[in-house]
Amino acid sequence: MSGLAQLGIWNDPALHDALSWYLAVAENQRPAKFRIAATVATELDLSTCGEDALWTELERLTTIFLERWQTIREGAPLPPEADGPSLLELCRELAYRMLAHCNFCPWNCCVDRLAGAKVGACKLAAGSRVSSHFHHTGEELFYRGTDGSGTIFFTSCNMRCLFCQNGDISTDKDNGEETDPRTLATMAWTLRREGCHNINWVGGEVIIHLHSIVDAIALLGRDFVPTSAEIRRARRTKADGFFWFDEVSEAATYDGKFNAPILWNSNFFIAPEAMKILRVLTDVWLPDFKFGPGRCAITLARTPRYWETVTRDISLIAEWGEDFTIRHLVMPNHVECCTYPVLEWIADHIPAAPVNVMAQFHPDNFCDPASTKYRGKYAEIARRPTGAELENSWRRASELGLNFETASFERRGAFAGPALMEL
Ligand code: SF4
Image (cartoon, rainbow, N blue to C red):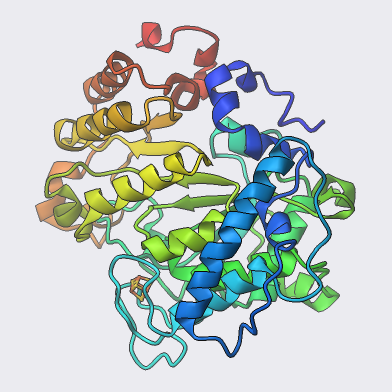
């Protein structure tokens, strides 16, 4: 048993219930979904099939996958991998087909990113760049555990949050190093063997890199072992490269082959087709839910259709019975228009979902008065939330009966007692 499973945070039964699949995969008691997908064979010749036929096949194989996933959850052994193409390779093929008329997210730019002559709202062609990858010790305790969350930070974004807390990578698409799927797989392979509890794909935003990530995951599901040149290449962006981590292959295997929970850490501005691919690859989801149903997503992030997209996508993972936790960042002057409606929607639709009501907003990017990028028109949000704004947010979450204290207050040890008493 790793340090993750021994943490007292799992004494919260709601959290344990919500993340039981993730924990079982992290502990290598169950195979990750990508390992199951590799067992679901397809008879199609993927490279010559039309895209419509590929989507029909995804639907058919997803049904088989879900039945298999259920039996494996209940303790059945993992069947042998498919000899030929499988659901894993089908997902990869579909991601690249989508890239040729990109509709990964609701911008639906329909640009051919493989050709690269035109780019869409994310400004990316087919390449993917990684800013850094490392053992992240700043995520929620159930993700960072004792050895860190194996986090891979991608550049650029499909939203324009003027306060972005990762503005250096979300607004600079050329940050970091160009990577290919084998280098990405090497990063994940190494982080997991070094003890990370999960592979945490994040940005910027990750959905705009769907093809690269799915390609890397497909490699990991098929006996991937990096070359020494690939390991050296991956290390160029390893932010904790000066630390020494013992590599233990058994810490990263199920039934003798590579295993790791896939954590999708995203703004959730994702198209439904992309969600269908992610469904059979993602073991645990970490959606951001920032803005209320009014115009704030437009004025603060220049993102239309935000509320309907994010509520639809969160509803989907809840209906699918997925493991997930939600993050909501409390923004100054946006408690009534954003925080309250977000919390109320969660209470109305998915009341058992673990929620992190986050206090760490700081003025950054275009609302940081100390930055040359600062714009005076964003003065309303150019400060930290007040104590009253945070207190009101947590009090509303409490009144609504949300499952938020463990995720929001774990650094205070508040899950051992009633957190709001401390306010
Ligand atoms: S990922 Fe989204 S923003 Fe980027 S090209 Fe595709 S549809 Fe447009």
